[in-house]
Image (cartoon, rainbow, N blue to C red; front, side):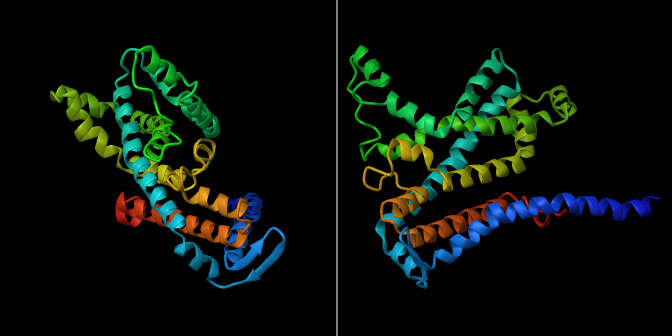
Length: 295
């Protein structure tokens, strides 16, 4: 009877998978193929795509603004995947012990992840406004030096934008807390019986068990930063100059301001390739694939 059920089961699995595959091809595969093709074409809003070979790629790699956008993107990927993920892990280690008021802290820490990123950008723009922002009022109240236009000053803009993403480490905290909750409590109890101190428990037991999930968080953070657009558009639009210009912002300006969709799609191809390379490198670094784990 079991042998007869196998073909029947495979049939229904196929029936449910086919619509998903069709939807994937329509929503993802077809647009990616279209972008890849038009990246090699002269193409704008008024003319159809005309094949131009590597012209768009040669043009963008000669553009200093494009090179600056790649550098900024990679620096943000590095910061987000190291400092922000580590911060999320550190907070999770503290909250794991459930100190007094830990549920309130956890909830407050997650609020920025509920708010849309564009709204967060608007909020920080208002808070840091040098004319009427809350920071200005606080500075005047305590007789401090007036706060400059942090988003409009090339000296501060990059790091001000970077600071707006710190609160999103709460997403990593929740992931780490979920993983820590799956650890057998008997292991911790045995360590406590043996006289292990809290920091020793974290260092020798908890952290080694977080290796794979840490790699997952790094992958998610890196991919998010490669495609980050909302906050930059609301706060700086890539300025001043190219101080906060990243790949998505460069792509947007190329398409919308230059009306050059072929060149913009070439940037999109590079952005997709960069994301794939980062995912593969991070997976290898954390030994997340089955071959490196010896499975």
